[in-house]
Length: 418
Image 1 (tube, rainbow, N blue to C red):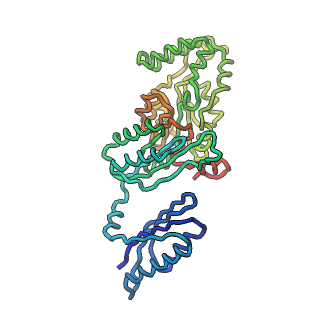
Image 2: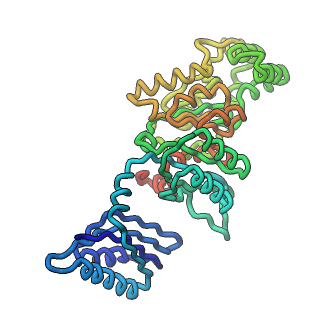
Image 3: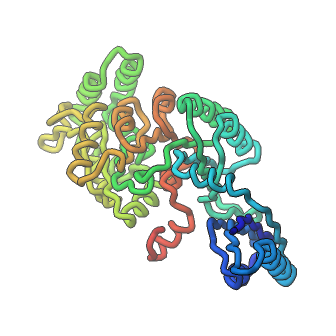
């Protein structure tokens, strides 16, 4: 009768170590049931779950003893530690039967990560009956002697187990996020997570670090009036469409040349160029869905090479802003409708889409997207959105997709991502 053993090999990594270890197992005709390896700072931890078949005419314990003896000799020769433990057949079968359990990804993002932050997240995982199966570092290595001007840190947990109350876990993770200053994403690990193909961004305060309407109002001398209208809208006294029309009306007479000047100095958000160029290499379709103005959206579309643009259209006659808008208003519900329309045109399911925005009028599209991300958002948006990025730039989105820094660096050098 065959026996099952879990073998753990730890020590300094070196080329050929795997070949030597598996070579010993091959000499005895072992079957590999599971295998996993991690290397941290050139220190290896290799795990192998093996089946040791009983040889014809040879007692099973003699075969097992021979295998383990050869492994221990190999460990001494390679200066690594070899540990092993027998696995009962019923425990192995229970482990096999558990495959296919729901999995979720917990992604921690910040400028740096501390043991205290990871400990709090790990405690939440444990108290909710979940198990961390794989831990992956997505961010690059950080030098302590010559640190970069703006560091990034990201670790991803793959966890398994039944979730009784997802809202409760999200609330716990949000509390840790707010208390410790890191972003924590919690989402299902399914086939769609690895097959997103469309991402849409809000423009003002998302792709760019300003609200264009405020820049225009200052140039038109109506800054205080526009600010008052905005505050009334935030208090719920005006809906988006009414407040937009009133703010645009204050811009009447503004010269188109001023719009050109403002468009030329739009400040891109940190990571905007990196995330769009990387996603384009991956074959993503990328668009802007904005309650702002297409005059400025077109400049960003050209600059970043984006596929889609939907925004509000300022009426300009004889080189002057009239204070009126043309066509349909792009508000919150319209953004959700447009996301559905684009996905349909591209032959995609909504689960394959990503939406990123900061304001209340972004919530409809965030809620229908496969992955909706509140980016440096207002409190009401952060509370209602499933995921959020508050500590990093837009390139933090790449971590949520599961892309490592080294893969991005490779892509920059002309290689493929992945």
